[in-house]
Amino acid sequence: MKRPRIDALDVLRGFALCGILLANVKPIAHMVYAGQVTEPMVAAGEGGDWLGLGLFVDQRFFPIFSLLFGIGFSLLLESAERKVARPRVLLLRRLLVLLAIGLAHMFLLWRGDILSIYAVVGLVVLLPSTWLPRQAVAVLAAVLIATPLVLGSNGVPLVPGLFLLGSALTRYGVIDRIESSVRVPAVLGLGFAVCAVPAVWLQVRGTAVATWFGLAGLLMAGTYVCALLLLLRTPLRSALRSVFAPLGRMALTNYLSATLPVLLAARLIGSPPEHWSSTTVVLISAAILVPQWLISTLWLRRYRQGPLEWLWRWATWASRPPLRRIPVPRAEPASSAGR
Image 1 (cartoon, rainbow, N blue to C red):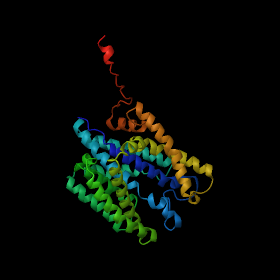
Image 2 (image 1 turned 60 degrees about the vertical axis):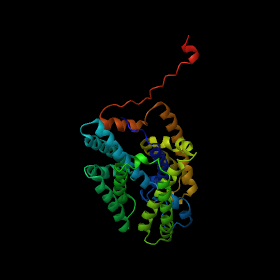
Image 3 (image 1 turned 120 degrees about the vertical axis):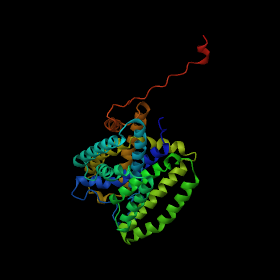
């Protein structure tokens, strides 16, 4: 029996995609200049920018995306176990294809591509963890998240732990119940928000900035996730699904297709990205996301998946999946049925 699609995951993925683009605009634009290509969008000590995108975006969205990657990986494993004799070979193939896509993106367009890192971490950490009991995966996730923070690291070093956390949540059945509770996300969200306040304050003050930068990012990411899960239990659910789910369902296509427009914008603006205001970053992001949302929405009305998602699925399963949606036949009016 096919597992029903979990709408909350699509909404979270689309939301995270928007934040990741905001965070990546300046690093991508640096490819046009001689600066670093992976530096944070707003560096510590940039004054007022801490109260804008730097405070609410940097390191706040990649944890959500990393967590969702681990969740998606484990959900696919569950599906593959029901369909093929060697599910881990299928997952290996999926990660190798992602590695190829990421390397192409990295060497052709942007050195800061995250897909190749995700693929390598998946091969080294996530795939081997599928042979471990879920208790071991949960403990290892906690260790791999805590260790970089204690050592004063943030960003990529947190990815293995976040992958395993997503896998553990799936294997414990939390993801299957993700939309069934209000109390759990409310309590967790409140806890994340309360703890995020001092972490963000210490980050802004520059006290052991790397440690607090990473911790504040994780806590705010947790706050965002819980807030969205709560909003999905309100009348805003339909609007959130309409806005974020199309972007989330075509996340790979949208992530990769955003790079060229940012590079083009950097050439048109003509000034180094470090001189750009937060407003400029938001406008560039909106100029990319709005067309992406429109294209994604229209595309998914006729097709089951985005074009790159479909190709990735084809390579994963080694068989061509259907792309077009099967039109639902209209019911014949009762008045004419009896004629």
